[in-house]
Length: 181
Image (cartoon, rainbow, N blue to C red):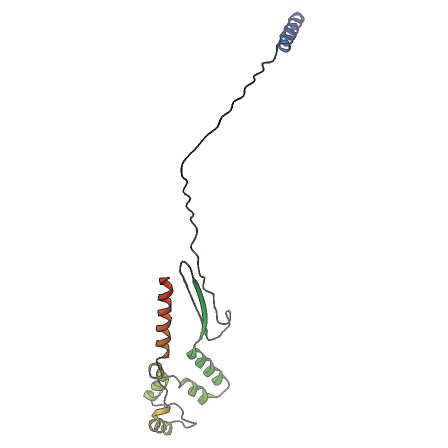
């Protein structure tokens, strides 16, 4: 067995000497190249359109207030407009004021506040319990209201002088003009 091992070692060393004795292969190459390209390049840029973002309006940030937020915006290719406003809800205020007066024990004053709404006024008259008239209640109040038609509560249509319609028309015209830009 020792002979086989000795023979293997001798053969291996001869092969490795022969490998180290070989000359390395050297390659030398130089190339010159040039590329000429002709053509046209079209670049398409896709970007999001400009945007007018309406403000977020809230009446009191969750507080118990009678305010409603309204906002809107318009965007064209060139110009963007954004605006917002708050609107008071008068009926909500009327209900809160009446509730507060009632809680303080002022029942006639609470009913008087509610009677500023023509629907409540008409309902009270139909029920036979007319709204108070300058501190007068009952049948005397009914007679006083019948004699004083001018101070009776009016509906919003009766009370409207048309200014809201004019302002709405101007706003719609301006919006239409901006959209044409």
